[in-house]
Amino acid sequence: MPILAITAFLFGAFLGLRFKVLILLPAAGLGIVGVLVGGLILRESPVTLSWAIGFFIFAIQVGYLAGLFVGYQLFPIPARRPYPDGRRYGDDWHSVAQSNR
Image (tube, rainbow, N blue to C red):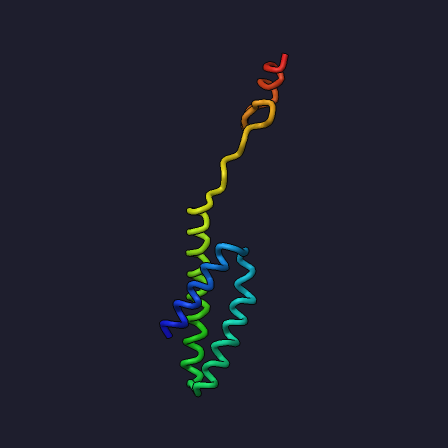
């Protein structure tokens, strides 16, 4: 179970760095299939399989959020640049019109 959690967390962090949130749907679907196949091969009980699936989904979502956080810390969104004519965002048209005379 710890290996499943670490793998799902790291996979979710990778997805959080690269993709939008909708990628979690196919990733969770593939993960559920993987957990089911592995559990059936090992002859796990249905209760254990359901806990493992829930744990996988939780870990991949937490990993996704961690990846988003790390991505925004490493690659922050740049501040808006001024207009080419020197105006700044928020300047009203009247003051700009007067400065161009």
